[in-house]
Length: 163
Length: 138
Image (tube, rainbow over all chains, first blue to last red; front, side):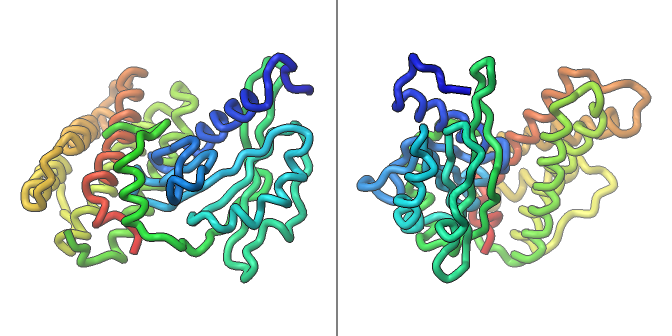
């Protein structure tokens, strides 16, 4: 199924971020979900970031790749994704292709952690859905929870449950 | 706040998470699962409340009357300077529905089920926001 031709790449990327944000919101327990999040600092932007358990839990980061080159671009971006502090890291592919990257690009060099793959699909009605193609494995967290608390206190969540 | 029994806290958190995810899954079809949804909503809140109690005091309440759990949580809010007690209201509402959901002959209606799901979600969000130091995994 081809993507809607009237939408440009930026629009498709935003749609995919929306679908991924909703997907993580369902997968986790009352998470706070952010899009285009400046994490871990203002010099770096994460497409989708979710902090489980309303900010008290684990950090999940997602880099979204769209279009025919999505799968190939994972190879170049894998090392960079590994540098972002998070317990769980993912690529989300919105290319309506069922291929997944070679596993060598998904594992941490020391084996502690595997990048998850989220497949975003569009059906004939134009509705998007997301599902795991590769489930993630936990990485050691190379930041502090104080950093997480500062982030969640100073940024508005895109999706959250209000207490 | 200091957690004096992090192991037991995490065990109650795990139970609460299982109940909540079960509730969310079943809530996709209210008609087929209505009583199960309600009961899981209530037990999710009870388990998370127990996690807070055991973390702060080392023990959970053993009540015949579960309504006392809300009173105890209210006292823990006071003694730990948690001024937002919205979560206590959510818990009290859920506990007040326990007989209607589990034991009474009458059927829990759709609106009440949706309200129970909403209260359970919001109780979880409240607990993780205001007792973060207790509920965060070590």
